[in-house]
Image (cartoon, rainbow, N blue to C red; front, side, top):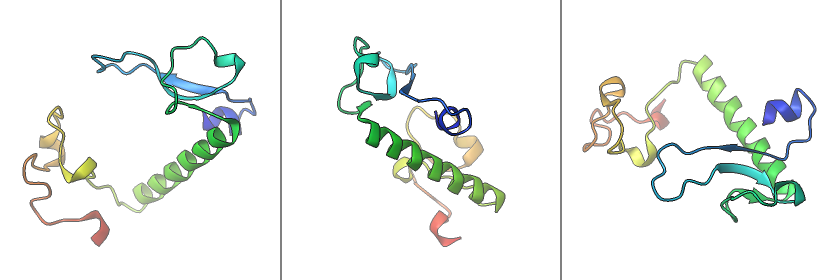
Length: 114
């Protein structure tokens, strides 16, 4: 959405994705401008629907996070950062990141120490 807004110059009214793992609530998720153009869509109100200022602020935040991550990757700071410091039960990639599911960060490594 940021590229469409900033590079192509279009008026972005939102972006949605279909959560593939959703068992109960299969509504499309994302970030959408709450106006007449998006009425009738079955959206998660309050989380995915925003006003123009909030939508632009959130897109700017995403751009800042992408720039930060890109800079870290360029500096070789690619680390393991699972949410809450633990691998979720559904993750099948522990062999790649080597972060043990039940132990958190067994080597005592911390991304903040770098």
